[in-house]
Length: 327
Image (cartoon, rainbow, N blue to C red; front, side, top):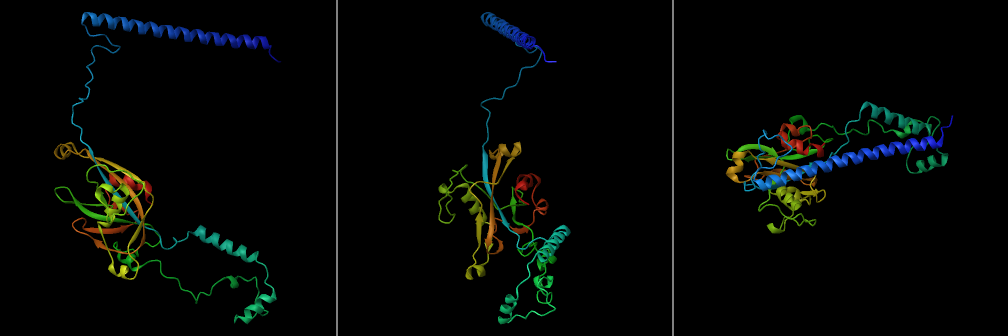
């Protein structure tokens, strides 16, 4: 049954009118309350009394922060996450092995039979001729003789001895460079990425990043400071430079990839007049060269570690800041 259109329109207008009446009543009560508060405030100001508020008078007053209270600035620092990319492919899983086997079988099954002219050309080039026992669609034509090829071992000597100074370990994983430094008055040893404080406060964030070599401190950007921090900690091999393979690191982009804000203790803030440090992390990849050591007293030791090994070295707060950008 189709409802009457007049009834539907009348009900809709009735609902709208009631909603409009409710809005008018609420607005009237709000304006009346505001006028009442204004009148009470004006009467209290003429009599010298404290104007009433909507909160209970028994509540203690809110202690506002003094504007004249000393606010210490933050110190700025930059750090470089230098990484070595994987050299070999990771070990395939059983599922990947089965899929590769399936693709090989499908390729052999769908392969076209080679015409005799192809085998004539192969015979002229020194290849064996086709005979009755050689089927062009057999899988042996697409496979290498196991006796002709022997792959290199996936586990190196650095893996067996757990030599974390070598780049030959964990060839199928990403490696990250860490340096060990002594911080604080007590000389506490701490592991971190090559990091450098920016002298004179915050510098300009220029897109153009001049090379650290020959640049004045006032012209260095944050990225150039990160490059300077990296090269000020490491020692490279001279033999590689003589062979034309000098140490080279490629910085990815001009913007930091991670950020850490660390607040010092109140006693340290009062003594040093520094609220904390803000560290900006820049990502770089090793292109060529070897790291043979570190430059004391800037650092004492270094290590190439995987992403799973980073929590063994880095402090928890430091690791949480860079965990989303390492794998």
